[in-house]
Image (cartoon, rainbow, N blue to C red; front, side):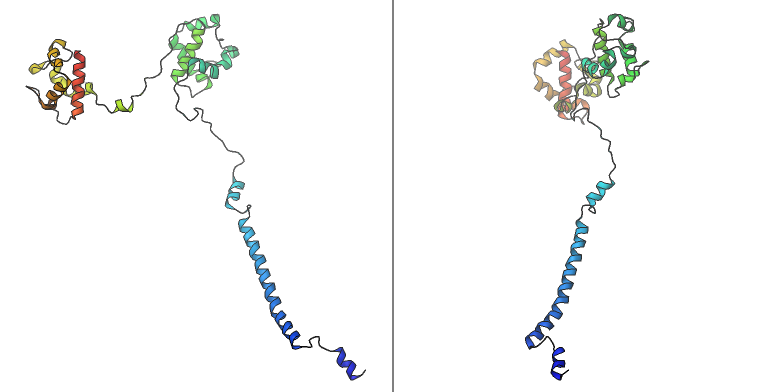
Length: 261
């Protein structure tokens, strides 16, 4: 083999300075590019792990949540309601047995079946309905029913069988906000004015004595208020109770004059 052929077989692919520079540049750029791409790949993997729904707090809580939950329904619909009528309670609770006569329950309107029970009287029947008896559970199985509602239901069923029981009235409505703030004239009279006005001592007109109050009533309410507040004759200002507010004194005057009208 000649010397020229040997040199040709080992000839370098880099023949020009430009090619040399390119190779050197690639030698630096390729590893850097690989490192950057790998860094982005791992960064994206960590981001996916952090944002994955399976690893999110909400998802974890959801996975740990019990399979079932107990919910309590609002039987009142969220708004305050008055006691139900006897007919309403019968339809909602009592009709389950008393409409068909199940378990020996006297059917609604069956006078023959109700007759011996009606003889026990309204009070006894109501007590039985509240406490329960035999197959009938206490309050018909509806513990939310009040005594008033139970009595109304009993009255409804009893009267349908010929009784003349009286349905209980609803409790008296609470005082309005305006009335609640008014002073109690009777209470003030009982604690301050009664010492003189119940006995007529020192010429004080007795409570309810229309003849004694007649002339005073003619002077008008404002004149009576002024006398009670400032005092007159043997009567000291505010009846001797200086802790009373003017409105309290006026309320006591209104109470006394009301008894004399």
